[in-house]
Image: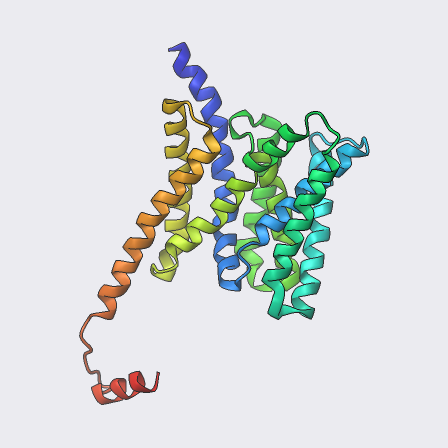
Length: 278
């Protein structure tokens, strides 16, 4: 009984962290995929991490809301830069996002070069420490997630380019500190790729089910096998995402194979002509 309580006391907060990340990242991932800027979260995440590392390097407070402020300021700067490049150089935006990612990543290495704990700090930033999230972290992320839900599902169409990048930066900033870069990227992209062949009205529901289910499965497997949780969750989401994606593909092929029936509004020959034109 004591072992079970101990396991729940560790896995419970980790699962809550995963659910909070999924709530914001699944709809954001669909938008990122449709915009063709898949690697933006990696770039913004690394810039946010760079903000925390830089603040610590200059002996600024980087705990609690202080860490959120440092990471948020850096992420917002990165978001503003990407907004400007998307307006000025949209044809190479994805390449510029990649350049920003590399610059931020190598800047972290340079700042941590003389830190005896630099390697461990960098590992925590990438893989995260989902099993050791604190109540304070969960509360801060819950507040930001609630704000995201309000903004996204109420004023999404009015955000515009700048609003999207700013909202994205703030959300990713909190998530990186909670679960690490790898899980942030996986939760953002895998559900979007896995569900895009499904009916549009079901994509969000399937994406949420996939993401949250993967955290449950990954944490469970990690508990049984004693393997690191973050990589296990990444693989769980990858494998389950493949199943969801293939199911959607089968449905799409079946629909495409259905015979064409004439209607009063659109005769068969008109549909055939439209098909030849397409």
